[in-house]
Image (cartoon, rainbow, N blue to C red; front, side):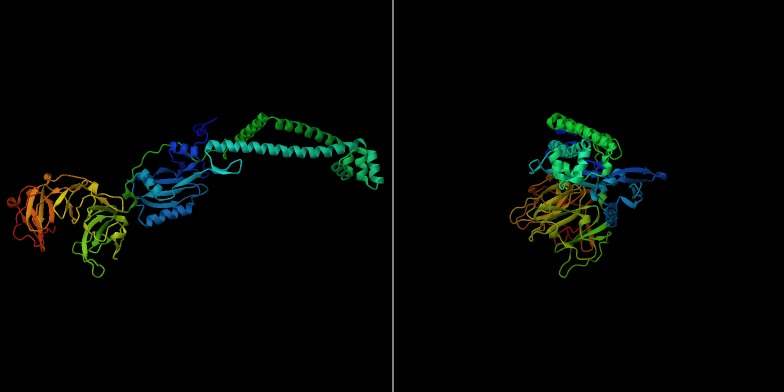
Length: 537
């Protein structure tokens, strides 16, 4: 009558021979045992050892079941060589007859829990075992059973085993008693038996006819040795006969009573528990029920932090080179290709890209192809149509904001967090009308927006006139009779407006002629403003 919840007090979870810690929530374990399907996460057991001068190390004393220790250490070493475990300094095996794997942190400032969490996520220090109790029932039909039904079926099987074992024993006793009865007849008629054996041509038939022996009894008598005819042997046979008769009576009583059979099964289980339950073989090895604190691990913990330069070519090939390369560095590209843009980053950064379709894409810097080769086509990493191009590429910063705008001069301010996308398809930020494109995505750092049109008109207006949105078409930044938006930037008015002209950076501090409000037309820019109508910085 016990429910699965009742049974879980006695079967809290699977017990593995190599120990470890079961980290599955109790509700998940209960659900798995109730349905007969599920899985269990098993972690290595570890402890922190304090060393001299504030140093410490982690010692792993139990590893998950069916995980080869040598393979596990090789796996960790390989990940260290690939710089995917930056928190781990070294690993060594100090095992003897017990497991002892030592993990040294990169520095004493590392949190041991965070170090182990990175290993649990990346290696077989944590494994998952599937539960699928698809078994044959009493009718030999395969089906999935829950824990309660499995135990009930097992008890029914033990009952069947007991019945068959008892029947087998009763048959053996009956055969032995039959032979013993024949022996006792011999002792009661010893002289006549000897005479028949000596004088009769067919002693077997004569014995059977004279004493009413069965075929088995007659064969047993004829096969007796002379030494078995002594008085002492007769007494032994009578004792055996009495013992077997008593046992036969008990077994026959057991077969007549189902209640006695279940009582016998209970006694067998109690004997098994007494023998193994509290001993070394019966002691539970896998720990359950421990509530593990949540450990927040930054993704950067899985990547060696180092400076890189992310390079995007005009034809959409992307790569990362080690170090922060100087701006004047000459980059090599495929024939007919050239530099589109580059950015300094760290290998732990996320790289955001904004395309002419108004979508934002995100790449992890450590996943970019490395080296001095040509890299990899960006379109293999994100879903970008052939007619779409990348407008800007930058390192994601949580608190940053960006001004996004279309070629017809509509735009808004977007938070950097809204530009993040975990999908290859990207995230639609700027809604672009038919025949138009997203033109730019520039940092919104400052208090004033400068926009310049293809008609060479420059307009300045306060940034607070531009709404902050997560998605949409935005508002009109500048009005045009002909053409559209050429470029825009956000700057601090007190510092003046700058732009690149050739190798020089020009500065204009008197901005009164171009100041206005959003959606204005603007005026011709200052002397020396680039003919490309772009700020260039």
